[in-house]
Length: 400
Image 1 (spheres, one colour):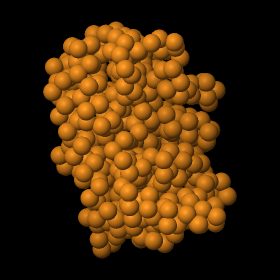
Image 2: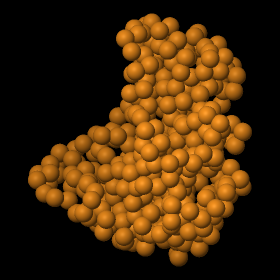
Image 3: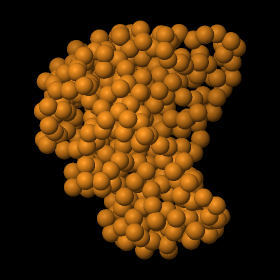
Image 4: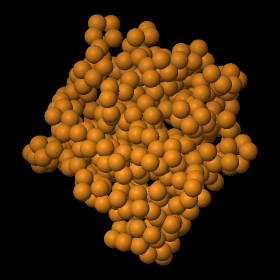
């Protein structure tokens, strides 16, 4: 576990993609380049969504309501209910439990301001796995909270070990960020794990911020959702789930997502958003409602990812430490035999033209100065099947 002071943390905020550009510099690729660094889905957004945007284009001339149109909130609430088999006392109320967001990143950052205020802690801390999605870290710095980095390595099954957390840190915590399936490792937290985390949040008075934006890309059974687990443990108090259409519907440019859960938190968050945060444009809201109501395109897209996972296992299955993720679309590859992810990224780019992201750029050094992700690199399986096949074939020749 590593605790960082605000000045140190601010200096540590860097874009992993800029760091990679600096690393590669003017190096030329060894073959026609294939960029597998960015988690930008490329299966194509359903055409019915673009048609809806076009039909409502005149509404770009209007300011949208910050709380979203009723049809969008209802579509999200219905999707959450279907996805998590909710009902009765656990039903999602579209007016109390859901707010639209301009994508998950905007909400993950802005929600921490409200979490800090509501938690009312002295020397507030924010807990997050290490490695992590960089927005969590930036949010902690922006909200003037202390980032506390929790090892999420192979030894901990790529999730923070909840049983080793310092009670003193938990007492100071305003929020705990967790992605499930995880970015970059692809591990999904079990319902038991989430129940344990939610119990800690309620006992120590912090908020669980569950980033579930990869929840609909999975192998086998759907990953457990914090909404379902919270409903089974007494309600949505202290639990906020974030999701979006970026990965689920191949629509990253729409910047359309939601936050759902604790109604008291959402009441305050709506007030804050009304003066400090962007609205989702009305044509995007109409299209988003239709996307949340349609599962056909999600099933088709998931099948493409499953085919690419099969290719990955075929080409890279003999790599020591190789595993397929529970969900998401990243491979988390141990490249220690190539002197770690950073050196491997340079070698592979120069050798075969495949661009991958060094794992060290998605983590921070621990208390001993060791970066827990330095041996790894992240590979995004977002390209069409034949491009992915070509990239994996090249990689297999370069790293096996």
